[in-house]
Image (cartoon, one colour):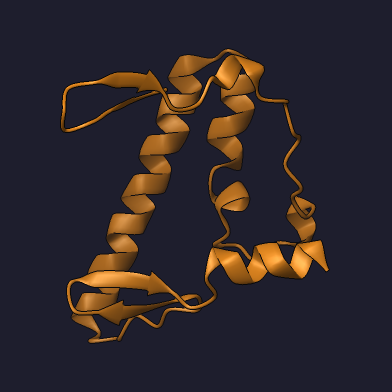
Length: 108
């Protein structure tokens, strides 16, 4: 990744080829909420791993259609969307627990 400064100078920002591969830590699917990312995308992910692009695309399409239908249903029933981890600040969404808080907790 390169950084381009206002002066026009380009420099290496991060050389991703030199970064170590760190396996992400994720709870088992059965321990996750149905709306957590891994659960929502499990069919698309499984098909991508199996190199079945058409099935992955179909799984993605089904998920997106389901999400659109849920948004429409909430709108019709005038149900307010409640967030768990973010709050609205003007036109932006702000994470309730800043990353620095997590990093400092891990270091201690």
